[in-house]
Length: 246
Ligand code: HPA
Image (cartoon, rainbow, N blue to C red; front, side, top):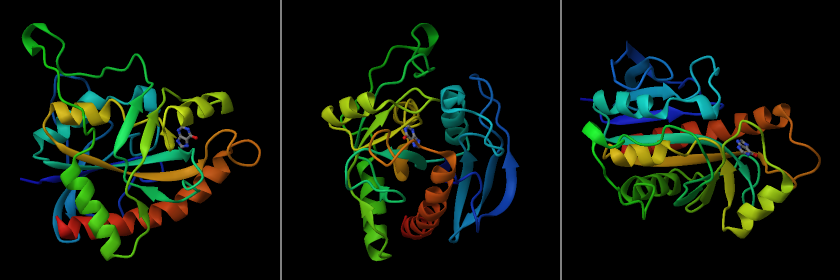
């Protein structure tokens, strides 16, 4: 059984170096995942890969079927899940193209299908979320980054917004007052669904742009794509390093 799954975000719809051996479709009760799940080998390890926004990047953050994605990778045998998330940098240190391994989050999303426990036959459960990210995997990623000399921040509180629009500077100021370092649209409900399915889930957050009001002028897609190119090169190196170490 394959035990490591990677969920790619904006800027990571394919995984260079992944030798794909099959594309898996899984029948699940929550609708369709973002695409078939690629099974293959990376750094000598069996890997599952799913791009959250679809292989053609056509699914916006609020329309991602997070329940289907997490259930599908669980059914295919995942134990560890490494999520990659493009984010905006709120605080000074979170400059463009930097990487962080978030340790906390605040969920500002609404209206997303966010639990497997809907009552009735599916039951009522209240998962513990003191550590929203799996500390074992976070530590492995931080150690692998240090060994491979890849700069990462070993903390970040991630403000999860509904999107798809970007924020106002006033909203960003509020998130900073709330203690957030980065802002993005995809960490939730992915992280809590992973916990509900007992997966060891952690994230690599890549700063695509300075958040609204934190940089010079308005945020452009050109700027985001340019910064993500550099950031994703670092992510690929980190993925290889951490996968070899797991
Ligand atoms: N805000 C929210 N989500 C994002 C951003 C941002 O500035 N950049 C990339 N994803």
